[in-house]
Amino acid sequence: MERMTTSDHGANHGIVNPVYGLPAAATSMHGPAALPANMFDTVPGYEGTVAGGGGGYLQPPMPSVPMPVPAQTPSPPVWHIPSISEDRARAAFATYVSSKCCYSSAPVREGVITNMESFNTYRYRLETFMESRSTEWSQEPYTGQPVDAGVQPAPGPWQITAQSPAFFQEHKQTIKVPYTSSVKNCHLCLGMGRNPCTTCAGAGNKVCRLCNGSGYRNSNDSCTHCNGRGRENCTSCSSRGSCQCDTCRGKGKLLVFINLNVKWSIEKDDFVAQDSSGLKVDKLEEVSGKELFKDAQYMVYPVRGFPDVSVAQASERLIREHQGKYAQTSRILQQRQTIELIPITKVNYRWKGKPNFYYVFGNEFKVNVDDYPATCCCSVM
Ligand SMILES: [Zn+2]
Ligand SMILES: [Zn+2]
Ligand SMILES: [Zn+2]
Image 1 (cartoon, protein in one colour):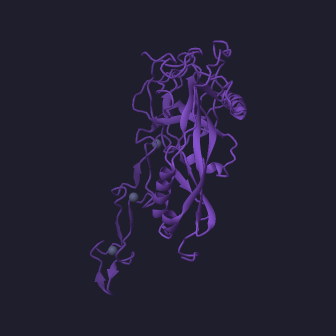
Image 2: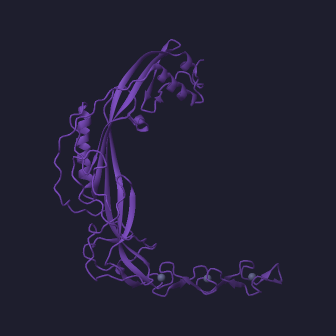
Image 3: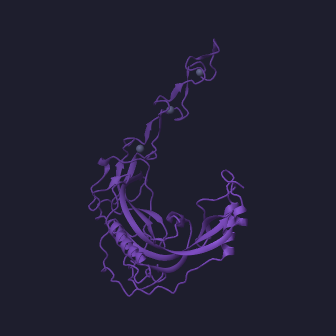
C-alpha cells in the first residue's frame, strides 16, 4: 500500500504523518442484544470496556516522532478584490426578486443604482481529520469460529491496524480484537437454543380467535375453525411451544469478544473576519469565496503575515483549540486550513424617491434584502 506521505495534499513543508497508511485487519459485525457483565473475561488493556459501547474514546499514545516546528510560512499569494458591475448586480437582484412570489419587480425595473460599495470579508477555515477508537464487548452466535482468548495477550487498542480511508473521507470500521474471543452459554436461552413462544406462552396453542374460546359460533353452530375445541394451533411456533433463540440463532452458545470501533471524522471551524457591510455573518455560510490560501498537512502551522491580523489570530487560536480538544481522544491524521475572500457588494438604489439597498455576495452572487420596498402585502404600488 502506497499511501504514506502528505505530499499530494498541498504544501509539503510539514513532516510525514507517522501513523498513517497501515495494512487492514478483518472486520466483523456485533450482535443485537447487550451482554450481562458476568460474561466478560478480564482482558489486560481493555478493563474499561462495556457492552453497547459507552466507554468513551481511548486516548492514543503520543506520536513516536517529535512535534513539528514551524517552518517558514509561505507569503500569501497576490490577491485582488473582485468587484461586480451594475449590470451584474441588477441581474442578481432581478433573479432574486422573481423567485419571491409577493415581490413586485417595479423596484428592479425602475430603481436607480446610486452607489455600490465593495466589502472584503475573509473566511478562515480549519478542518482536522482524525481517527478515534473505542471498544465494546460484543457477541455473535457460535458456529465454530476460532476461540483465542488468552492464547496470547491482546494487542492494545491503538496497536491494531485499521484501513484508513483517504484524507478527509469520513468512515467507520469495526474490528474484532484478536485474542479476546471465548465461547459462553447463551444468557437468553440458558444454552437451550430455544425460548418459550411469547405468542402462546409455551402452550403450542391459543384461544381460537373466531369463537373466542367457546367452541361455538352463531349460537349453536360448532366453530369450524377449531372444530369446537375452542383453541387453535399457534402459528408463531408451529405448535412447538418454543421458538429459536434470536441471540444465538439456536446454537445455544455465543462467541463473546471485544470489538474495536474505529471512526474517521472531520472537525471544522470557521472564522469570519469582522466586516462593516452590515450583512449578517451567518448568511455567508451559504456561499463560497475566492480561495486565497490553502494548506494541508499532518499538522498545520498558524498562518502568519496575512494582511488581516484577526485572521492570523483566529488561525493560531483554532489550531491550538483543535489540538487541545482532539489530541486527547483522537489521533490527528491531517489538517487543512483555507482563507477565502468573500466578496460583498452593498448596492444602494433609489426607488420612488426613497433610498434602499441590497447585498450581492459570494461567488454565487447571492442576494440579501432586509426590507424590500414593494411586497404585495404592505406596499403602495
Ligand atoms: Zn374456534
Ligand atoms: Zn406458540
Ligand atoms: Zn440463545
